[in-house]
Amino acid sequence: MDSASILQHLVNGAMLGMMYALVAVGFTLFFGVLDVIKFSHGDVLMLGAFTALSAALGLSAAGIEQPLLQLALMLVAGIALTGLVGALVGRYLVLPLKSAPALNTLLITLMFGTALREAVRVFYPQGSNPKPFPRLLPDDALQLGALSLRADSLLLLALGALVIIATHWLIGRTKLGLAIRAVAQDEETAKIMGINYTKIVLITFALGSALAALAGIINGLYYNEINFSMGLNLGVIGFAAAIVGGLGNFYGAIIGGFLFAALQTIGAVAIPFGSSYKDVFAFAVVIALMAWKPTGLIAEQEAQRV
Amino acid sequence: MSAPLTVTSLTAGYDQADVLHDVNLRAQAGQITCLLGANGSGKTTLIRTILNLTAPRAGRITLAQDDITGKPTHEIVAAGIACIPEGRKVFAKSTVEENLRLGAYAEEDKSAVIARMQRVFDIFPRLNERRTQLAGTMSGGEQAMVSIGRGLMAAPKVLLIDEPSLGLSPLFVQENFKVIQRINEQGVTVFLVEQNVRQTLKIAHYGYVLAQGRVVAEGNAAQLRRDEQVQAAYFG
Ligand SMILES: Nc1ncnc2c1ncn2[C@@H]1O[C@H](COP(=O)(O)OP(=O)(O)OP(=O)(O)O)[C@@H](O)[C@H]1O
Ligand SMILES: [Mg+2]
Image 1 (cartoon, helix red, strand yellow):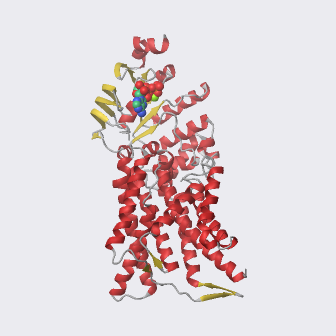
Image 2 (cartoon, protein in one colour):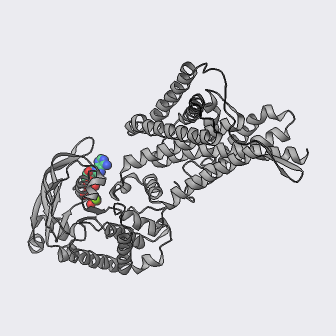
Image 3 (cartoon, chains in turn green, orange):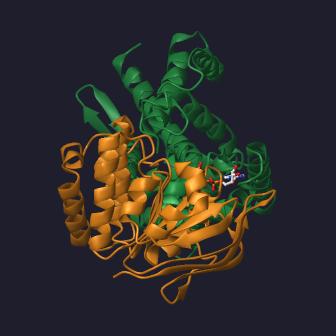
């Protein structure tokens, strides 16, 4: 294989890893503060992408065509609405079921995700077809010696990395993050500290959902296409990444996300006709990893849980 | 700064049954009021109910003139009640300094937080040396310092303390009592749950005895020392 296609695989793998990591961090945050698995997470991601697409179409219809302005408004619309939906899911579907068995939360969010997905399929104009996603970033090739890279890929990678670092800073260094970590460790004692428990849980749900929306939008910008069922795969992979890394652990989620993408890339490159088997390969390795380390690569005791 | 805490006709409990029955008591402003009682008599439940971690079923709780009954816990804390909970409950995966900062969570003024932290370090120099250590890796005695220091960080009007000397060496217990007395001398109303009756009665201005969820005796230290219930429970 020549170095150009190696580079292409690397960029592609990094892009996927970043999207998975963004989704996995959401799972880990929800599990951290509330010990719940929110199965609508993937479909919430899809909602973020479709909201951004609708915003783009609306802006174009209104004659606002400037690409960077469009992109900025799409990000704001997609992230804000999805964050709000995440907080509403927390408030009306998850918190009320707090004293019920965890399976009930899993089921109710699974049903909500399905309803969301079906609603987009049925109510979005021709919602069952893939939708073209606007190409808004400059896609000229950057020359690195003999290698060339598309500028939009680099920009998307930089955006994702920046957001992951910012989230890490928020959790680890701010007063809000301090409260989120306190709630994650011990709900009652956090309340005794004067922390408004419900508020922190809802902010966490909004934050995790906003990250998923960003992953969905990055996905659209990278492949220039989205569809109503995009959240299924990304949701399952994000969940797997969070579990493999060690559910509840921030670094684990990032590692898990990039690990899964690396496995897919290796599968695609190393196995003959691998690109059709790459998911089978990646999931098989993840299953083996889970059997070997049932509580995740980073054991919860050793690591800082969010 | 200090304020009285009044509990009137309080009934509370968990799913099945009431644990507290018609409890009446008052922590006088600026005093140390202690609550004695055998294991399982409902002392921790009373503290939980004051903070609305366990919902009161009947009765009233007031801080100075404010009725705080049934308010969310964070509002009760904001009104000026802090708690050093039973079993210390430090945030094990956070550092000593983060634990202390959490104690002052409601305080927006950063310089006030720093000043309070300095005062806590004056009382427990060990915590200053261990600022960046994860609280969960500290010894039991050190964790007690974190828990007490964290309670002080709130600069409360009323401080609820639930068995601070549980599992500590006699020397350390004595230190703890001195610290509690010092806090009180700065004007904080203290409501103290303790099994260590002799030492508690040495520093308490007034006390109550709880048995099976009811107040069965009250009085000043001298009166309680003579009380039959206390005698039977602790000095027998
Ligand atoms: N979360 C709970 N759910 C159900 N019952 C509880 C709960 N917590 C305490 N109880 C019961 O309430 C009663 C009073 O318990 P509480 O913890 O208030 O006693 P205590 O006086 O603090 O005892 P100790 O001195 O051992 O700390 C006990 O019978 C206990 O079993
Ligand atoms: Mg107790």
